[in-house]
Length: 150
Image 1 (cartoon, rainbow, N blue to C red):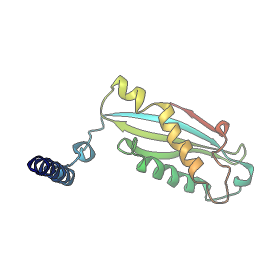
Image 2 (image 1 turned 45 degrees about the vertical axis):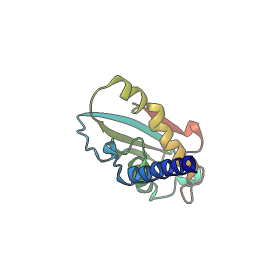
Image 3 (image 1 turned 30 degrees about the vertical axis):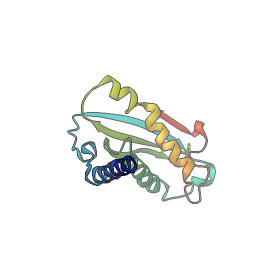
Protein backbone atom coordinates (compact mmCIF):
# COMPACT_ATOMS: atom_id res chain seq x y z
CA UNK A 1 0.00 0.00 0.00
CA UNK A 2 2.84 2.38 0.84
CA UNK A 3 4.58 1.58 -2.44
CA UNK A 4 1.42 2.28 -4.44
CA UNK A 5 0.95 5.61 -2.58
CA UNK A 6 4.52 6.68 -3.33
CA UNK A 7 4.15 5.77 -7.00
CA UNK A 8 0.82 7.62 -7.27
CA UNK A 9 2.33 10.66 -5.50
CA UNK A 10 5.30 10.62 -7.86
CA UNK A 11 3.01 10.48 -10.92
CA UNK A 12 0.90 13.38 -9.58
CA UNK A 13 4.01 15.52 -8.99
CA UNK A 14 5.21 14.84 -12.54
CA UNK A 15 1.82 15.72 -14.06
CA UNK A 16 1.57 18.96 -12.05
CA UNK A 17 5.12 19.99 -12.99
CA UNK A 18 4.44 19.31 -16.69
CA UNK A 19 1.27 21.41 -16.56
CA UNK A 20 3.05 24.30 -14.86
CA UNK A 21 5.97 24.14 -17.26
CA UNK A 22 3.65 24.14 -20.29
CA UNK A 23 1.71 27.13 -19.01
CA UNK A 24 4.73 29.27 -18.14
CA UNK A 25 7.01 28.36 -21.06
CA UNK A 26 7.68 31.24 -23.47
CA UNK A 27 9.51 30.55 -26.71
CA UNK A 28 12.18 33.26 -26.89
CA UNK A 29 12.81 32.72 -30.61
CA UNK A 30 9.18 33.50 -31.40
CA UNK A 31 9.37 36.99 -29.87
CA UNK A 32 12.91 37.83 -30.94
CA UNK A 33 13.20 40.95 -33.06
CA UNK A 34 15.75 40.36 -35.77
CA UNK A 35 18.03 42.99 -37.18
CA UNK A 36 17.82 42.32 -40.90
CA UNK A 37 21.17 43.48 -42.21
CA UNK A 38 21.30 41.60 -45.53
CA UNK A 39 18.86 41.40 -48.43
CA UNK A 40 18.00 38.79 -51.01
CA UNK A 41 15.71 39.18 -54.00
CA UNK A 42 14.10 36.41 -56.03
CA UNK A 43 12.64 36.88 -59.50
CA UNK A 44 9.37 35.02 -60.11
CA UNK A 45 7.79 34.81 -63.56
CA UNK A 46 4.33 33.29 -63.71
CA UNK A 47 2.77 32.21 -66.99
CA UNK A 48 -0.91 33.08 -66.94
CA UNK A 49 -3.33 30.56 -68.49
CA UNK A 50 -5.42 31.80 -71.42
CA UNK A 51 -8.68 31.89 -69.45
CA UNK A 52 -7.09 34.29 -66.93
CA UNK A 53 -5.45 36.82 -69.26
CA UNK A 54 -8.56 38.99 -69.51
CA UNK A 55 -8.92 39.27 -65.71
CA UNK A 56 -8.10 42.93 -64.97
CA UNK A 57 -7.63 42.58 -61.22
CA UNK A 58 -5.34 39.55 -61.49
CA UNK A 59 -2.01 41.41 -60.89
CA UNK A 60 -3.32 43.07 -57.72
CA UNK A 61 -4.99 39.86 -56.56
CA UNK A 62 -1.77 37.89 -57.06
CA UNK A 63 0.34 40.56 -55.35
CA UNK A 64 -1.90 40.42 -52.28
CA UNK A 65 -1.94 36.63 -52.34
CA UNK A 66 1.85 36.32 -52.61
CA UNK A 67 2.23 38.83 -49.78
CA UNK A 68 -0.18 36.81 -47.63
CA UNK A 69 1.55 33.53 -48.49
CA UNK A 70 5.00 34.66 -47.40
CA UNK A 71 3.75 36.77 -44.47
CA UNK A 72 1.99 33.76 -42.99
CA UNK A 73 4.65 31.15 -43.79
CA UNK A 74 6.10 29.71 -40.57
CA UNK A 75 9.53 29.32 -42.19
CA UNK A 76 9.78 32.61 -44.10
CA UNK A 77 7.47 35.18 -42.48
CA UNK A 78 10.24 36.58 -40.28
CA UNK A 79 12.39 37.34 -43.31
CA UNK A 80 9.83 38.41 -45.92
CA UNK A 81 9.82 42.17 -46.54
CA UNK A 82 7.87 42.87 -49.74
CA UNK A 83 6.74 41.85 -53.21
CA UNK A 84 6.56 44.11 -56.23
CA UNK A 85 5.31 43.71 -59.80
CA UNK A 86 8.14 44.19 -62.27
CA UNK A 87 6.26 43.43 -65.48
CA UNK A 88 2.77 42.44 -66.51
CA UNK A 89 2.41 41.53 -70.14
CA UNK A 90 -0.95 40.50 -71.55
CA UNK A 91 0.69 39.86 -74.92
CA UNK A 92 2.86 36.96 -73.79
CA UNK A 93 0.63 36.15 -70.78
CA UNK A 94 3.24 36.57 -68.05
CA UNK A 95 3.55 38.48 -64.83
CA UNK A 96 6.92 39.04 -63.17
CA UNK A 97 7.53 39.75 -59.48
CA UNK A 98 10.45 40.55 -57.25
CA UNK A 99 10.27 38.91 -53.83
CA UNK A 100 12.35 40.77 -51.24
CA UNK A 101 13.68 39.09 -48.11
CA UNK A 102 15.88 40.41 -45.35
CA UNK A 103 17.95 38.25 -43.04
CA UNK A 104 20.35 38.73 -40.14
CA UNK A 105 23.69 37.81 -41.68
CA UNK A 106 25.44 36.03 -44.51
CA UNK A 107 25.54 32.55 -42.98
CA UNK A 108 26.19 29.76 -45.49
CA UNK A 109 23.86 27.26 -43.77
CA UNK A 110 21.10 29.84 -43.42
CA UNK A 111 21.34 30.66 -47.12
CA UNK A 112 21.48 26.97 -48.05
CA UNK A 113 18.49 25.83 -46.01
CA UNK A 114 16.23 28.79 -45.19
CA UNK A 115 16.76 31.17 -48.09
CA UNK A 116 17.11 28.42 -50.64
CA UNK A 117 15.40 28.78 -53.98
CA UNK A 118 13.70 25.41 -53.45
CA UNK A 119 12.09 26.46 -50.16
CA UNK A 120 10.91 29.87 -51.36
CA UNK A 121 9.49 28.40 -54.57
CA UNK A 122 8.00 25.43 -52.72
CA UNK A 123 6.00 27.68 -50.39
CA UNK A 124 4.45 29.47 -53.38
CA UNK A 125 3.76 26.26 -55.32
CA UNK A 126 2.14 24.65 -52.28
CA UNK A 127 -0.19 27.63 -51.92
CA UNK A 128 -1.24 27.41 -55.59
CA UNK A 129 -1.98 23.70 -55.10
CA UNK A 130 -3.91 24.30 -51.87
CA UNK A 131 -6.09 27.20 -53.04
CA UNK A 132 -7.10 28.11 -56.56
CA UNK A 133 -7.53 31.69 -57.69
CA UNK A 134 -11.27 32.27 -58.29
CA UNK A 135 -12.01 32.18 -62.01
CA UNK A 136 -8.49 31.00 -62.77
CA UNK A 137 -8.25 27.49 -61.34
CA UNK A 138 -5.23 26.32 -63.36
CA UNK A 139 -2.97 29.25 -62.43
CA UNK A 140 0.34 28.05 -60.99
CA UNK A 141 -0.56 24.35 -61.10
CA UNK A 142 1.69 23.48 -64.03
CA UNK A 143 5.32 23.44 -62.77
CA UNK A 144 6.48 24.74 -66.15
CA UNK A 145 4.30 27.85 -65.74
CA UNK A 146 6.39 29.14 -62.83
CA UNK A 147 9.92 30.34 -63.50
CA UNK A 148 12.06 31.23 -60.51
CA UNK A 149 15.58 32.62 -60.12
CA UNK A 150 17.74 34.50 -57.65
